[in-house]
Length: 109
Length: 116
Image 1 (cartoon, each protein chain N blue to C red):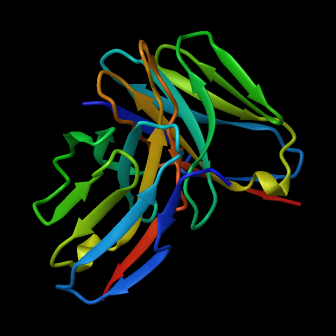
Image 2 (image 1 turned 90 degrees about the vertical axis):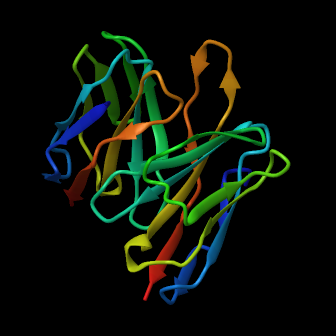
Image 3 (image 1 turned 90 degrees about the horizontal axis):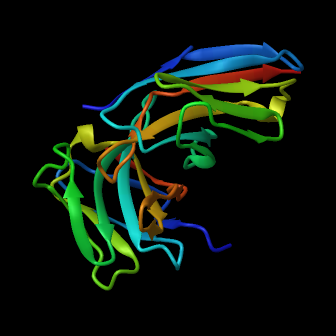
């Protein structure tokens, strides 16, 4: 059974204070790892797809990396508008996604 | 806006009543998914369709839940005899299927169900 563990559960940063979120996974044959952003009361918003170890993708202040056991979402010089819950999900041999519980990020001005 | 839409956005019902939710996917997407999300948890898979065929259902999906996608376009999720434990956000997502690739799923805004 696929498992996804995200840490920390919650993270509070000052504006401009860079940090990283972790997503550890156990799957039988990773076919894709996905990062989503979710604002309160809304559906998840797609950010990145990573397919193989060593792959990196960037979007504005966010950078996602992938190893064989985990993925990191690096946030550089965050702004208050980056405050949200960040969800990690994996796709293995099935057509569905298995999500972690998410990391709730709060960036204070 | 051509994203995934869901209706209603909010539904309050009494225990024992039936409810139905609707999802309209992105027009060129042939796969449609239903998830359930409770507070502090990630979305949990319920079921998915490829065109009009329901290809997979989670063990979470009890007999009180039924989903349809009659013409391969919009989908409905019905919950019969609702229970308080059914209170959650119900999310719909859609994706394209390309041979040899798994494409990202795009989510709708969700329907929040409250069972009193």
